Length: 352
Image (cartoon, rainbow, N blue to C red; front, side, top):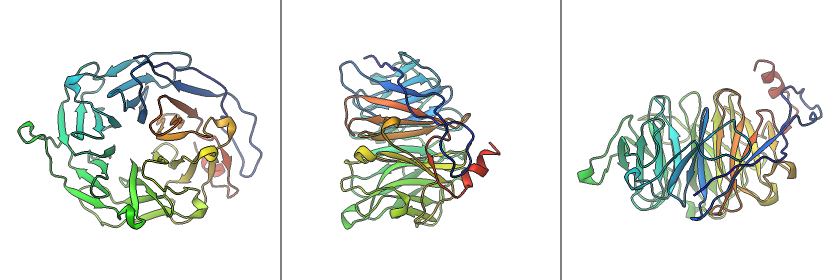
C-alpha cells in the first residue's frame, strides 16, 4: 500500500486583517492529497503531533505518519500495521502528554490500543483496553483522562482513568470511571460523532442531530455534571443537521494556540469549516467560515480536523464520501476564511 500527496492551489488568506475588510490576495496554498493502492482505504480521523501528521486508515487497519510540513509526492515517515498491533478498522487517533499514541478500533473488539511514541511496523501495544464495538473516536486531556465515543446500544462518552489497562484474561475489559449519556438519536437526540478537549480541560462533543448538530461541552475528568455546561447549536451557528449517523460527518477540534473552536460540516457543495470563540455557546454565528470552490471542500465530507500547535494551521481530512476510497488533507492558514464584522478576531490577531 502506498500513500502519496500532491499540491494544488487552495485559498489561504494572509496573516493580518481588519474586521470587515476585504480578504487579501491569497499568498499561497497547499492541498495535500492522500491516495491509495489496493487494498482500498478510507481515512477516518487524524491528529497532528508536530512535526508529524497521523492518519488512521480505516479500511487498511493502519496508522500512517507524514511530515506535517511536507509538500509534493511523499510516502509516510512510518506506518503502524500488522497482527501484533491489534489494529482493526481503526477510526481514532490521539496522543497523551507523554507522546504515547492512542488508537481506537471501531467494530469487532473495539480495542483502545496505546503505543510507545514513534511506534512503527508490527509493534505491540503498551496497553490495551476493550471499549466495545462502535467506538468511533478518542480524545485525551492534559490530565491523561481518556474519552471514547460509542453508539452501539446507547449514545455515550466513556471516560477512562489515566494509565488504565485491561487484563488479557478478561478480554482487556476496563470499567470506565464515568459515562456521559447523550439522548437517544431515535428520539431526535444526539449521536456523538467526534471529540476534542479545550484548554480548560472541558470535553467537546461534536454531536449529530436530526433537528440540528451541536457542540456539547462537558466538565472533564472522573466526575462532573452529567448535563452539558454549554451547548453550541441553532440556525445562526451554521452547524447543519444530520438525518443519518453515517450520512454527514460532523467534526470538531480546539486550538490551544489561537483559543478557537473549529467545526467541519459536511454539506455537499456547502461543506465548510466554521471558526468560533473557544467559549462559544448558544445560537451564535461563527467568527468566520472556510467554504467555497477554491477551498477544495465543496462536495467532500470532512472526517477529521487537527490543529498545528505551533503555527495554528488547520488540517482537514476529507474524502468523496464517509466510506470513500481515497482522501485528502487540506491545510489552511489560521486566518483562512471570510470574517464576521464584530472585530473580535481582528483584535485577537494583534496579540498572536
